[in-house]
Length: 257
Image (cartoon, rainbow, N blue to C red):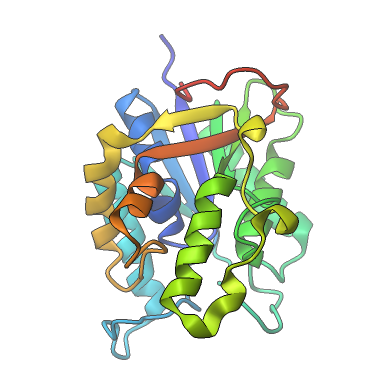
């Protein structure tokens, strides 16, 4: 039986763990050879715990990426060499969001050519958190894979229901951020059940994912400080939407491979 080769394309160190960590662990458990392609080194990320202390944040975060990936069972890592665009402000031409789109597609395409994956997972550019780097890597990954035979491409997505509760909890925790209690239906944030083609029971991978998260010591998980039941909803189920070939509906699968 031919080896399954999986490629996970993300924007920053920690996306692979805080986001797709259980998906990676499930692919590895299923016997897949997993490569993580990370577009940037997360240079513009915060260091809320003051751990870097003058060191190069991008270098530190790349080390965290590799350490967390090793915990998850990742076999190979590829860095695209683009800079983190940050959340706001002008995005320079050397950044993921500011580089010409065709250049980003070309770089991802070179990785696809080298890895020859049958399964590709990336971030949802349409109904995700709206971070411009997350949008760009999702769009570029799909463009790089379009027209390639034998490749299935999935967005890792968040359910609209869990995001509704997450935003409400963020607003409760920070009364000055009441704007976070947005109407997710009106904003189109998160995916409804009809959009989801794979629902993965991530319970068996929670422990390894939590160990991998601890390797990202400079970063704060998005569900940090949340009630236990809400954290469990993030960590016990993962959802994916198949983009290529397009999902045509029906009961969702329970595994990628």
